[in-house]
Image 1: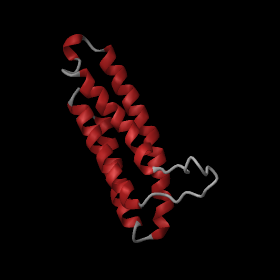
Image 2: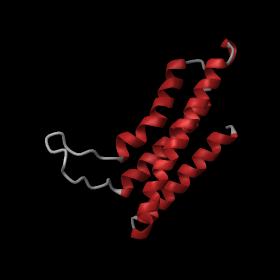
Image 3: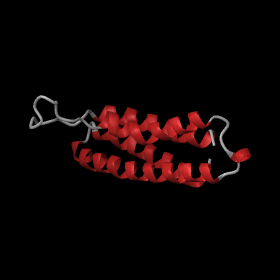
Image 4: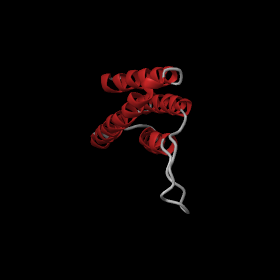
Length: 123
């Protein structure tokens, strides 16, 4: 594993542990939710850099299955917005939306960490 994906996986693990603790310590909830937004920007940077490297590589250095590699890239960037944030219902856009449970955030962050590892393994 290269350095940047290793750092990203470490940050994701730290966020997952902190989110699990935040379910008991309410004062940690806001920083955890902010960290999730910040790590999403880091994930976008990681995926764009990775796809740039893959597209610039020779045919021999490209992943065996480009579709699988792109699938992991899409999952890496798309899981957090898909699972960790709620939108108001279509019929009542002004309705107040409660944030998702921190346990959903923990599971989502762990799934994204697995996607980052698989993204680097398929390269």
